[in-house]
Image (cartoon, rainbow, N blue to C red; front, side, top):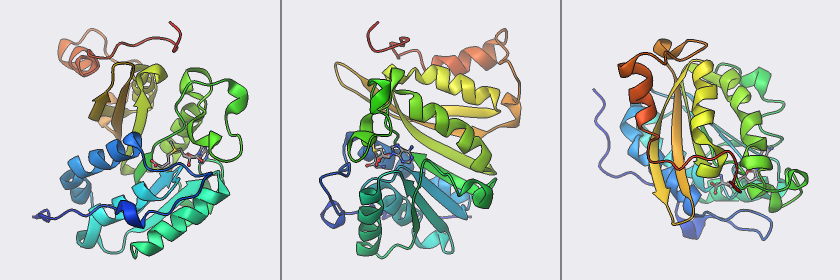
Length: 253
Ligand SMILES: C[S@@+](CC[C@H](N)C(=O)[O-])C[C@H]1O[C@@H](n2cnc3c(N)ncnc32)[C@H](O)[C@@H]1O
């Protein structure tokens, strides 16, 4: 039986590198790390061999994940990607400052890694650019790429979901940050059609917005094209976790 360590370390802010063009750890980064900490026992039980962060920014999250999995999980391989070359450099320095080994690659989502890592990723973590913006800001150079999410903040998220499905192993899980404006219920339904169950691990709300960290994992019981909308114990109980969300189609409505 696995006995979780009483001390879970995460990346130390003072050792996290920075650069004016790289996203600094913020409330969303902390929420994602809190979700990983909250789910640590489950993560350890899955005995992950390969972990990936898409959009690593400062390296705070991938470093924290490695420290959270810690010594109980020796031999885990860590990968991180970012479209911003400055973020790749900063992440490398943050990892080094914590004595963590990882392969950090400058690429769009996981391009160039998909064949190598197909069906092998046990833990995928993503704090994507989710802010609704004009479409032309998506993928801009530097810091703008950190938040510019296009219409409904979904442009990058919607490209990540099929990649996640391709990369995740049978026991793999995805932890992703979303905003209310991204229509997280619709994201969960999209993933459900691919055979993934989902649950909110962390939710943080301000007067204006709600931020959620959602966990997705393959579940044979949801491997259906259309969820069973007539089953009270199935669809309704699954939907109930979203009842507090003021969902809307876009940020203006
Ligand atoms: C909200 S920031 C999160 C940074 C870090 N993971 C954290 O939580 O502090 C989003 C990151 O995704 C990167 N990014 C944006 N579009 C991307 C893409 N298409 N492929 C890879 N990374 C991308 C940005 O450069 C940025 O570093």
